[in-house]
Length: 195
Image 1: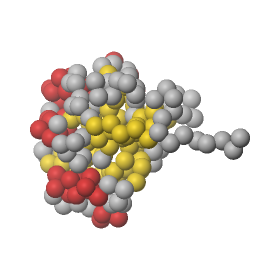
Image 2: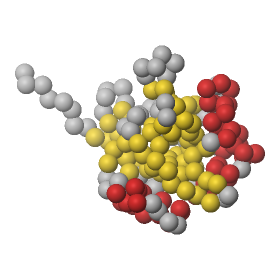
Image 3: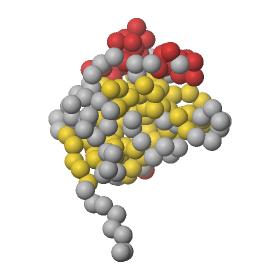
């Protein structure tokens, strides 16, 4: 599962390189910040085989209208009616410097790539309540993540970005891929009680 990720200046610069003409909104939002469910964030989409950056809110409205659906399992998303049309027709990429996860002891870990300053997370989007919203796809955790959580974001490699966005015939194959190994840093600070 992925419940929070973060971006930084390197993320913005990488999006600029990929998109070629970064828009003003992204430049204004540069700098390190956490992205939480329901918040707006930049995602990459494509049309005519060219990538674009767009701002969308994280999370589809839940069935009861109160909660948000922020993740979808890559191995079952195509079988879920709520996700099917978006996954087939409106795929996106969520660029991030890394993401956080908490273990059973409520200790926070951050995960990132050692070989790149940006993670490219697979996702999809749709419009609800007059807002464009996205969901992060997750996969079973690999060896670098399993000690903290049994799920992790579905991470794409640079050469998989355009195929994810523009080649529907590759969707099922990419949904089944095993994400790369990540570097983990634990934050062992615990809440200290005054007694």
